[in-house]
Length: 345
Ligand code: NAD
View (tube, rainbow, N blue to C red):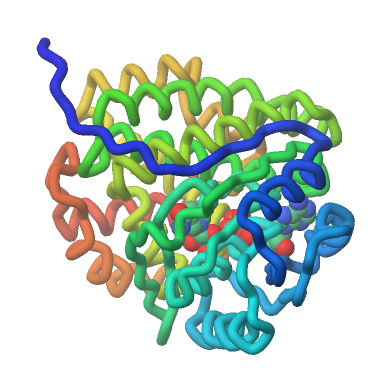
């Protein structure tokens, strides 16, 4: 088979080193020449934020963050940035903090340095998301791609095990979807397969020893690979489903990914057998077995999704099914998939 593709690499510096966040962040802020930094963080990351921003020229610390970036939250952050004359944004937290920094960057063009504390991977993509009237809108824009990422696995050791698992499976979903998303190419697939391997190694270690460095490093490294693959390949069927469930029904992002992923894998897998084999080889076996061993969330009903909302979810998802999905998706298919996800593994 001949190899032919077009692959675009996004310009971004990545620093990876446990225990090195403060030094690395100071260097990145200095490289930007920033004098009035807006730090965007959540309560959970506040202690870490105070520690690693000590000595930086912080103009304001903004902790009015909410998942899926409601437009009102974005507007308040944009006003705060303008009001304080911020010249750079530093996000310290999970995908919600990164997402808010991106929303500010989208309209202001301010540079972002991201310090992630979960495995969501938003820091390595140029995708933004905003939620208005229970609908999530997403787009891509080079302005929202953080100029630099500071990865410090020690910052993730405080992430409780169930959240670590759900967030790690969110990264796994980036890998799996990247294998058949609209713009997938061999480079994305190589990154995704390596990401799956690193998650398969790291996540069981995180569960066995949440405070240990090694499992956290494997998982964080995987989160980066996963996000780079995803940013290039685009959102596949799995992400389209999860965006609707998160935006319309307010379901928690990472947990929803963990529930839905095995159903999408089983749905698409038979239509893309070679890709499916690469995924399961990298996983070292069955996804449901791995998820069970990690005690990952099992059912949408456990996450508060009401069975009576299934038809409206199906209606919203169908127009978003990506072109080139390995198999066509009918209303019956999506109803069956979502019903199985609602009921649980
Ligand atoms: P999150 O940022 O909301 O974090 C989940 C919870 O974990 C929060 O309560 C947070 O306070 C807490 N937390 C975070 N880090 C912690 C730590 N180290 N210790 C203890 N608690 C901690 O959730 P998330 O799953 O990281 O991100 C989800 C959001 O990111 C969604 O809005 C999603 O759409 C977005 N996202 C965007 C992209 C993209 O490319 N644009 C990619 C992935 C996710």
